[in-house]
Image (cartoon, rainbow, N blue to C red):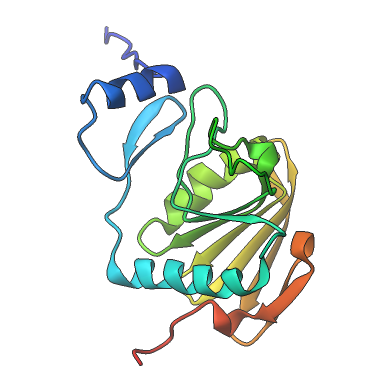
Length: 188
């Protein structure tokens, strides 16, 4: 008879305490469903696409939203993911007293190459369960933008795939642009 394996899950408070005590020395980790997960190293292609998104959105959002890059938000007591880009509801204190919660997020973006399956299969259901209204996956494998909206339980009811050259609209900010503005197709 085989013994059942039990996992010891951590909550957000324990996770932060381990960080403060110097126990968590790794970079690029996040707390997902009570587990401390090593994230893939950020490659140059991934970083360049995040930078391009930041440059694009910076043109449009002044005063309409807070642009947060690769920073955590409070999903629940066992999860504190660090998505690539978030558009947050504006606040004068810029969330200095605590990390934003799921209800503060207008749009969440994951740039995905090697993490594509993980983002779709693990993170996306978490984001839906937290009722984040819209999540984009900037898919660097296929050069498409996957737009997920209408969260229901742990899934999104609507998925739209935009190809290079398609127009995309950010509803909360009432702005539109071409998906080609999100991707770097060749070196310049």
